[in-house]
Image (cartoon, rainbow, N blue to C red):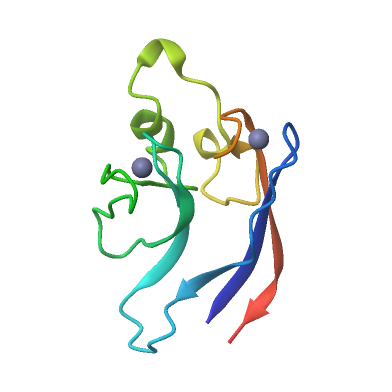
Length: 117
Ligand SMILES: [Zn+2]
Ligand SMILES: [Zn+2]
């Protein structure tokens, strides 16, 4: 169980599918699915935050989790290209703007769509 989110981008109109974040369906409770992005190929999706590192299915790079403190450090390896992201000030993904997997701009917002069980 957990919270259902959707993510959408104010710049390009990207819209994610519904994201069932939280404990996994197996019910074991030992994994926790959370929105992530691949810093290399920008693949977007839920990954198990409890068992890092999680690798991108497409390019095998280590994904970065939205809302994590070190998001920008890990997402922008080139220090000259760092942009301010919501993660800099809050670990709540509902706060601030985030990197869009589609256009790369910091214009993605998350909205909660209620709980799921
Ligand atoms: Zn990738
Ligand atoms: Zn976008």
